[in-house]
Amino acid sequence: MNLSSLRRLGASAAVFGAAALAAGPVASAGQGQGQGSPVIGPKGVGAVKIGASYTSLRKKGLIGKIRAGCELAPGTRSAALKSPLRGSVDFTRKNPRKVANLTITKGALTAKDVGIGSTIDEITAAYPHAKVDHSSDEVFHATFVTVRKRDGGKFQFAVELDSGKTTAIGVPFIATCE
Image (tube, rainbow, N blue to C red; front, side, top):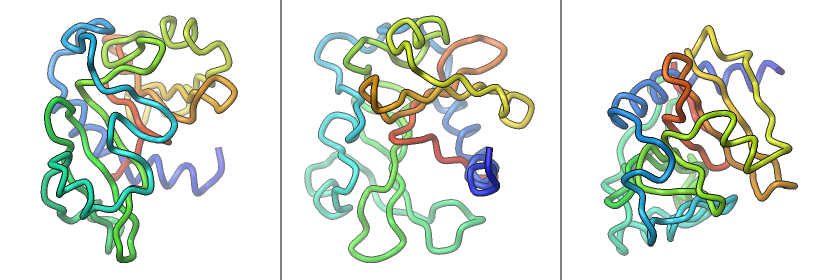
């Protein structure tokens, strides 16, 4: 893992921790995320896409008000996802603000029915080339599993060590702020 990756991970612990707490008790894959749930893919989740402007998403009622992002990264901005989704959207630093990454903590599944509550075994069964990274286990108390392009990614799962269940899904990665 290179220094910039480590900083990105280190910079997001607080955000990840807050997302995990906001998610509440985890359910098994698909529970509370029935048919018709927004689909998580490499371009975003549901109608919230990477590169979409804050203004367009806000007008459609898909996100909440923009607010300050990570306190360790001046000039960053984020907004909460609106129901049926739960999570956050991080925006680019320059105007017009566009979606840079998303973190989903409830309300969506991947095209292969993997979501919040899924285990590493379920993720790797659906995405056989997924990269399981245990280097973050001590720092974040979570294992990060990255689905690569060849499997329909890029997106990333955070699997909590204690429960062994996914608590957050990031497109294209899980942003961290520590």
